[in-house]
Image 1 (cartoon, rainbow, N blue to C red):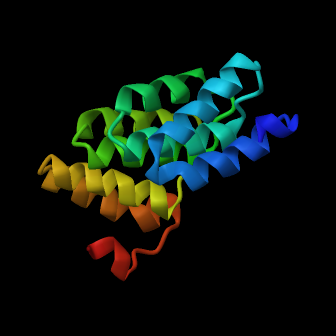
Image 2: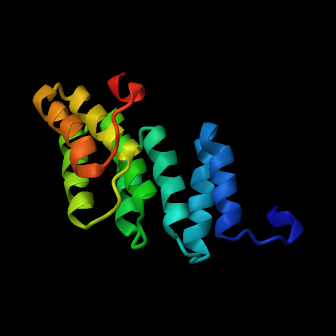
Length: 149
């Protein structure tokens, strides 16, 4: 790409990072390129980077990207919540959810699935049931079969 005098932008690098999920090196290169060129890390780029780092077990890098992103949306929060939950950082995930909810950010089914995953990993049965009970009442999300897994 660069040898053809083509300069990738943020969207190009999102595509490269998504394609490179199996090869972390390409995603890390894309992230380094973004930083070197001082390109904007908007919520889409941040979400893809958080997902990439979290899915490869590099939670510290995922946290750094998340913290540096000033433009977070529900998807970005969901990526970080999911990464924390699947890697056993349940209390941190639940604290992040509380922060997300307190800022008025939209909570969706994916958000609550990650929260319940965090509860399951930490064997927080009572808290998991509380979140499950709040789904429909507080968040307007009807529990479905996927929520019982």
